[in-house]
Length: 367
Image 1 (cartoon, one colour):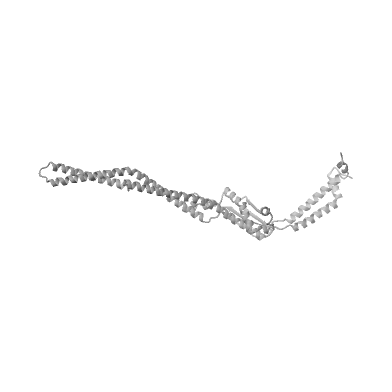
Image 2 (image 1 turned 180 degrees about the vertical axis):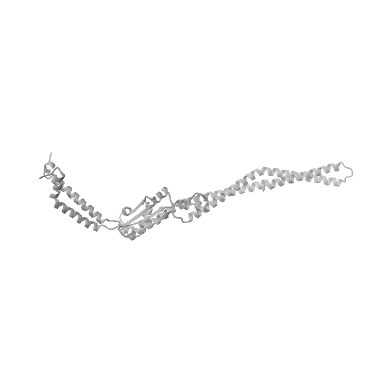
């Protein structure tokens, strides 16, 4: 009885061709076993770490000049920076060069495309990804389990160094900017000192507060003395019996007093002309000196931070020497190939049985 148009017909066909199907499946199973036994064994070693916050390298944090809370773990942009470093050409070239991966991967260095092939092989065995907990997981596969662990740990250490170098490079640029700024301010302060010295020498202004009070006091005293001498002279000139020498001495005293008052007035006038300029220059000088001192202190802090080591990553797990292979999964491969062999052979016999009565020659040669 024929069941071509039902599932029973399919089963009937499969039972009819059961020996070829079982034979093909057996060949697939045995062949897969032989193939997987020839596949190289790889071991995977993994290291896990978190990106550290750049706050750890900030001078303000190191010297406690800010009240903001310290951030120890990096944010998304810090994680992205670490991922970029971890997948950079510089790191890959460093690992290839350090572990002599051309020889380890058996790649002929004389070939023009050798760098391409070694990088292609390396990229297949080197994986970096962010975990669901925002940690960075770096894994390396290799046929040598010790080599896998060594490459993974070396990569993590170099990522830390590269990340520190980026921050230290930024700090060095900032140091150079501060150094140029300090030199320029020192030059300006030197010019300001020269100007202040010239103005003080020209107008005789050295201490605006004490000199102003002193000159005013001296002028008042000299003016009082002159008035007293002038009054005595007027009285003696109109008084009979006063000796001529006394009047002559008083005249000399009056003339000396007049010259002294004139000199003090001239000095006070000159002082007043330069006092405002000197006060402005003194104030500018004080502000410039203060700012220069702050810049020098800031420069020292940045330099100390730049020269001090700091962690760019927080290590969670070092890459240990793996015990169990990562691939190939021989049992899975054998089962998969065996199942596929059965499916393809079954589909093949169904197709052959369905179209066994078709005249393929007439179809091929039809015009």
